[in-house]
Amino acid sequence: MESPHGAALSAEDFGLKGPRGWAFRGVEFTAGPGSLVAVEGPSGSGRTCLLLALTGRMRSTQGRAEVGGERLPGRLAAVRGFSALGPVPGVSELDPSFTVAEHLRERALLRRRFDGSPRSLLRPRAERAATARATIDTALESAGLDPATLPKAERTSVRDLERLEALRLSVALALMGRPRLLALDDTDLKLSTADRALAWELLRSLAADGTTVLAVCSEAPEDALTVRTRPSAGTDTPADDTTTGKGTADAIAETGRA
Image 1 (cartoon, rainbow, N blue to C red):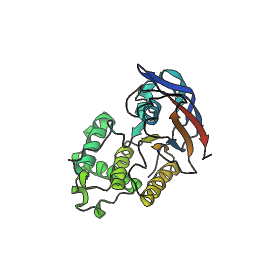
Image 2 (image 1 turned 180 degrees about the vertical axis):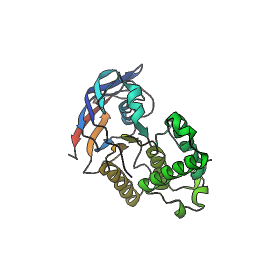
Image 3 (image 1 turned 60 degrees about the vertical axis):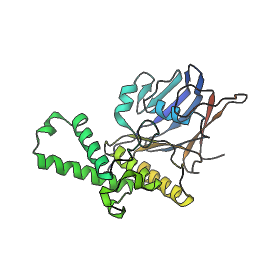
Image 4 (image 1 turned 135 degrees about the vertical axis):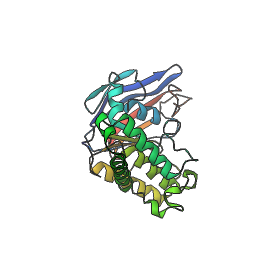
C-alpha cells in the first residue's frame, strides 16, 4: 500500500498526571518517520495512556512531545487528524455483532463523509462506490487479511474471527484513512508464538512502507525502538492502562532491548 510519509516522534520529560496520581512520567525518546516503536511494560503501567497522549487523544500534563512536527499538548486536534487507532480496548474496539463487510462499509462511509472533499460527493454514485471498494481492497491487502479465507468471507461476524484476524481487520480499518501514525494497544495479547511473529511482521511491513507504527505490547521485538513503562519504585498502586491517573509510572526509552 502506498503510504504517506510517516510522522516523526519525540518526547522530553513527557508525563500525564490525573486526580489519583501519575499515569506515566519522564518519557524521553526520539523516533524518525517510518519507525516501529514498541511501548513495552506490564498491564497497568500506563502504556495505553502514553499511546493515547501521543496520538492526541489525551492531554499530557508534564514536559512536551512532538508528533509529525506538531507540539503536544497544544496541537491535539492536528495530531488526531493524521493519526489512526487500531485496536484500543474501550476506545476503538470492533463490534462483535458486525460482520467484516459491515465494518468496512461503515468506515468507508465515515471516511467519505468527514475526510472527503465536497467535490468528491458530486461524483457519480458508481464512481464513488468503485473508489471506496478500491480503498477497502488496498487496506485489506496491506493488513494481510484475505476475506476469502474467512469462514463466511466478508459476511463473517467479528465474534467468529481469530485473534490475529481481528487484529488485521482493525489495522485495515485504520489504514483506510492513510494515517501517518498508526497506534495499536495490546498488540501481542492472547496471541500464540507463531501469531505474535506474524503480527510483528505485519507492523514491520507497514513501517517499511513509510507509516510510523506505535504498538503497545508485553514483550517488544529486538528490532523495535522500545519505550518501557513500569511502576515506580515504592509505588503500591500502578497506573491503570485505560483510565488516566491511577498510580505512578515511569517510562524508559531505548533502541532495541537491554
